[in-house]
Length: 300
Image 1 (cartoon, helix red, strand yellow):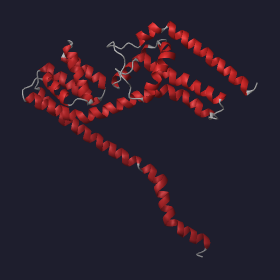
Image 2: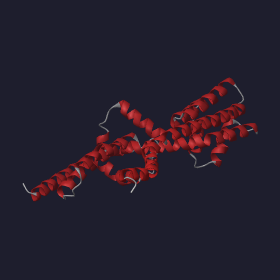
Image 3: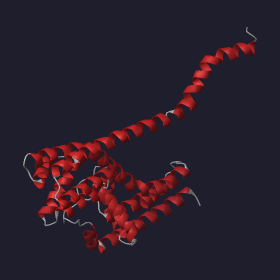
Image 4: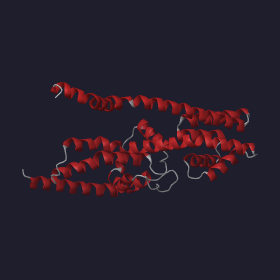
């Protein structure tokens, strides 16, 4: 069988897949609309990732209806937690996340394999095979990168926010008014956005403790968890909020200093590896190279 026959077969398979996809989309259009409906009832916001924006229409047409067939409750719960802690709740939902995994893990690599074969692109087989697991893992990489960025922002802003809250409460504002004033002044920061969500939850009827626990779940960092636990305890026991906030600010700064010392010690240890493998051999060559040459040539 020649290359022309393979191209014909590949074209027929693509045509059959296109017909199947078109019919499936028509039959599942209403179900897809329900899948893409967010908790707020609005459409998802534009993603920061070009790849997600590029593939979103294809995911909607090809793989979104199949993401509902993934019924594992634990897997869906883990994805939901990752989306929440990475701040992507307005950008992705669980079904679209799984649809992205299916698209980048199966459909896109299969298209690459077909094009590589029919057009004789000459891509190495190991590179084509590596696209399969790498593509399926792409949504996780994006979400975890966003989560790491949020954690760094929150750790940087938390002592400053705690100081401002302490000063505001000492000046006569109650705790909720102080949060509102600071969130307005620091608009655009991750912690300010999360505090606005806390205020919104309280306005909708949630207790202060429940709203703060929601903040702890969304950010999922040790500093915020400890900070929220102390605030809830102080609110329950009637302790002075301003003094608690001052103590927390000092403790957070001390913890940051300890973490910086640990990171510095770890960096000095990691620097030993390139020094031993690359720098020391170069120094030995420069210092002892002429001596070795003279010894081998007998001093001539």
